[in-house]
Image 1: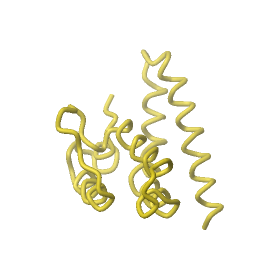
Image 2: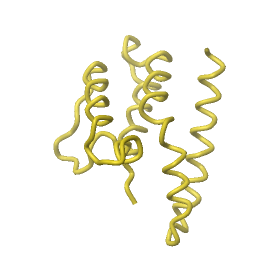
Image 3: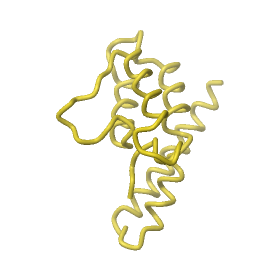
Image 4: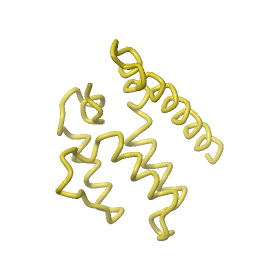
Length: 117
């Protein structure tokens, strides 16, 4: 099971979506911790960036506009497909529930951003 945006957006790991993500992260003043094995397009990393954009202290970076742009570009296009794949995996007992929760969360976030448009 691959939990990386590049895989879902381009069909390849470490592809153009990861390069675009790194550019966007740099504009937000964020960089990768080299001690981590996963690249920045891992679903957990992207959720952590969203947490920062929601709860961060720097309002120039952590604001609704940045949240919406980041979500629409780097999570929304592929998160549902990840949830589908995770839920369909035959050994995904616990993670099936995680996939259902994640799908609901992504849906609520998308609806919330639609209300601000």
